[in-house]
Figure 1 (cartoon, one colour):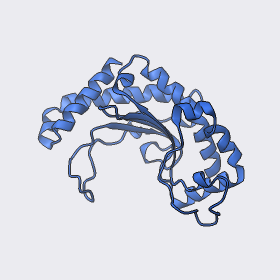
Figure 2 (cartoon, rainbow, N blue to C red):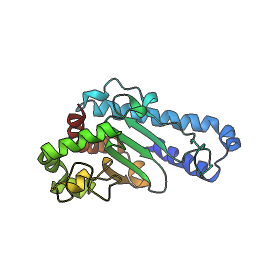
Figure 3 (tube, one colour):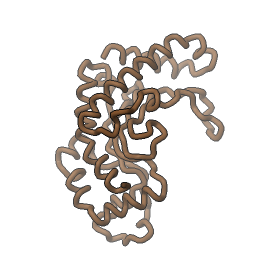
Figure 4 (cartoon, rainbow, N blue to C red):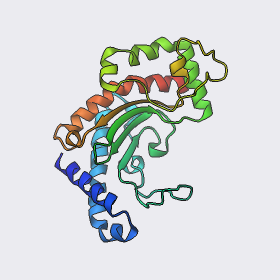
Length: 220
């Protein structure tokens, strides 16, 4: 998609000129690229809604993250993120529920992801309980050869020990130790700017959808 080539181009320039003065001078271009991303997010929502009705009423503006960085407690004092991100789940970017994530960043750092990221202790307990009780349902998704070939292993921070209440020799310990449950698909810049990016993204999110459904079942 040619407009995404421009989006990545703007982000490259922002990476080299990460200052308030530069951003103010280039605000029209920033707003144009943000609009392009919002349009893309709307099209992705339209595609997602064909197999996940939970996202049907989402507004793109509620899904896209602010480009300003929160530097209050960070050693990195750069003012702006060098990527656009959007989270599509009930409640938008502030949601703690399972959903779909779009990340656009030049330098072959873009990605698609789905699942749940750093759920709070109550949600994490429910997910682990579902894995303990109905782990075969999870295995039927993430242990398929087609899944592994496209997405590899589930990603997320991991405990070094067994979580409280579970034995270290539990047959599903490698999943119980996870603190996030994510399917991640890294993307090259050439894939992002390709004309087929939108339909392929929706197709890939559809393949990730069973994981989202498993997690929704766990926390419901």
